Image (tube, rainbow, N blue to C red; front, top):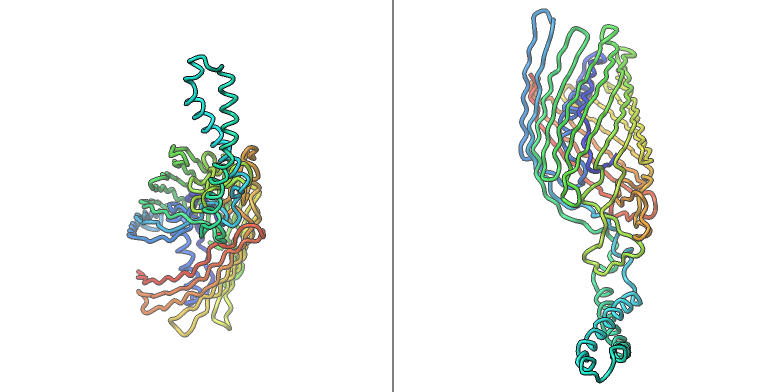
Length: 466
């Protein structure tokens, strides 16, 4: 689900089950599986708390293999180094200006009147103190005169001030704006990961570490994964644990700790030579600073807005502890007459924020001739809102324990559809091109639809096979 300020632990899932016979459509599915394992190592280093454009400047990869005779033991050393930049615009947490609790004319007048009264009173007292000192009148007589003078002049001053302020406010081009305000960000991330898969007969153990640094986020993570092949490798049982020790710079520029522990268990079962099924369960606990320092909340009362160009926000406040559970299942089937295969998958998520999510997906891998595979894909995702999500927090003078206006915690749905075309030019060379359309929509009828992003995603690649 969409999150903010979250590092996913490095839990690499190992699946060695494959259905036969071999064919390009199936090979495409296997390649996506291999890519998923690679991403399981790389993506934990990526910060997904900001929804904005990201450009990758450099990517390095290292792979080393150690294997004893007779397959007694095999060790593979894998690693990656990434340097990339992130830049773009992201919502601040404020709703569109048309929904801001702007100061009314009455509020502007009363504020100006109180300021003018105090100023005129002080000015009168300062100018007439000499008459008290000379004994011409008492201090009480002088202050009574000051009050009468301030009352007679403050009204006119306040009226002129309120008229000018209200005219400036209501004539601002953003006063009736119906799109959420955005803020621009830029940062650079440097990261590396290192894994050491070790195979002992039917057993595989994979310790791994990862490190990532940004100007406002530093992450260290380690993981230990284990898989066991049973039934002549027709059954794979796997489990894993990962720990993240992160440091986050909060909204006051103070570095705070964030720790994450995640546990994983899964099973892959070959049903027939052309079909298999996967079941997985994940349990995660997070502790420490879990808020997004770049997002604020706007109170609906006792915190009036005076400038449509600059939202007055208070920092969001999320719980400092979060538990989550994920259960998923996937089914893959090859169909001989069509020379293609399909993948059906479902994912359920729940956390202590009160969020429930459901994701269903469908992929088809269709061979065209001997060298081309076309793979359409579709995903549907839906979630309810977190218990502390607000468009406007009700009252600044009576704030709830926790509050956030991050649209990714609202009730929403996403739809993703696209296609990938893979062309195997040579047994050692392939080209692929993909297009995805991603659409996020709010469902609560309150959050502005302008807060939710949509995107066209194009990608292409060249692969060398050894």
